[in-house]
Image 1 (spheres, one colour):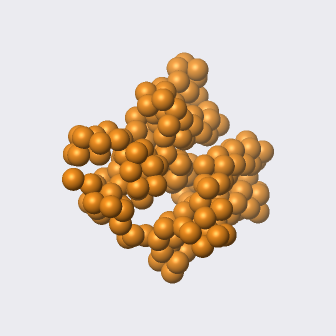
Image 2: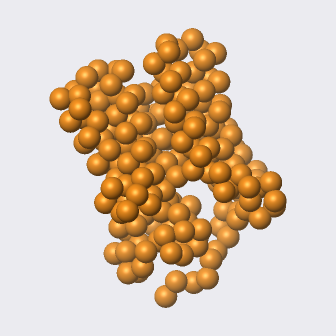
Length: 198
């Protein structure tokens, strides 16, 4: 049952909501326009705020549901791994040629389902960063190491430390190009549009 739960969580994460929604609305592959990332921020740049919010909510729900699956089949510790499996699925979806998003929204859902107190702090820091700088990626990049720090200082067990380290590593790895663009002053800001998609 635990193995099935992990597999189910991965396949749940592999449902690329950004790809499906944009394909249905515009008949295009979101990975070929804008930043070419299958995530809510790119959907916002290409199609606007409404579709982006829908993608964000659905991606968050993938993380929440994966944690629920983990609790059902194996308890709290297995829920950590099911959450990770969902993020892996989102980032490298089997259904879409292993070309997915960056995992921020799905990680967001996983964290809120597992550690709401820590998730609240990261949410405040992340959204404050975005509001001040208009860099969505910077909120994710700062939130990733903050997660590991908070898990350690709050005395969580080694299971949670490993969990936080893996999530942090995946987030920073998927944002490696954003980090370069931020350092070079080339990163796009929130609300910055791409060429209109007809």
